[in-house]
Image (cartoon, rainbow, N blue to C red; front, side):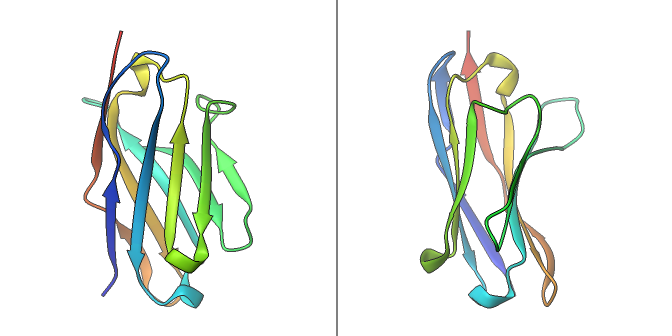
Length: 116
């Protein structure tokens, strides 16, 4: 079984920063990609950022230049550094993992609220 444990969400004022973390309990070599998605109230879940096992990254246009995704392979952890936060960034943020061996897995979600 794969487990993803997220942390780092919370309440922040507009213009502030937060860093989300996601620890994966899985054999390291089996991870193909990890990423972050978010779902705001009344909206569909959307991609925020992804990073592959080779370090290639992909970002939603709405967060480019403000968010940075990174990985610590030794710790099986992916991070999302969020800066210049806006009220429209308010959502539940979900960690995602894809493995060709284990399939696709989701974390339980961590809420981020940005006040204006």
